Image (cartoon, rainbow, N blue to C red):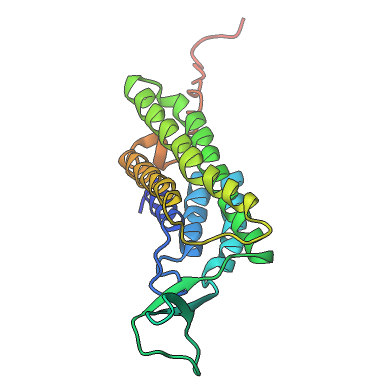
Length: 226
């Protein structure tokens, strides 16, 4: 696996939340570990540090508090299902608002993804200088656009929603019209993964760039020293 393939897969795992119950079936911590591995291969300490912080923080959202509800047609209301209160109707899963330390960990993990994609962009730009050319410039332009799309469409909305929900808690599942914003974030994450994975086999994206050593000077013993 190339480092940028690992980054692409890691960002997808972090950016897409898929839960059938409280447990995240696409664990964010696995995505962060992939990004950490890529950071080690690319020799970028900042990205490795950010990915490590994101991995620790994401453990808090691996499983979220939730409850089940049923619709009671006699009262035209949703009622919480308990062992003593089961009406026998269709049951629906609802997540409780994320509050307290769990909300703080969510903010840290979300902010970490923004820092990760930007730090990766900066690092790739520095590595690509030795391979300067029109195609490299186009690749970096695509990665820059995809990175900022993740920041604007995925990171920023979640941070704003978390800050505005400090008192009442953050809703882990967004509803209309906020769901449209969440969908835009998912599109940005997928686009980032496609763009970054596309250039994973480029020399500047898969190995360290080292300066070639200067050629050795061969001493000609046939020339007398003056």
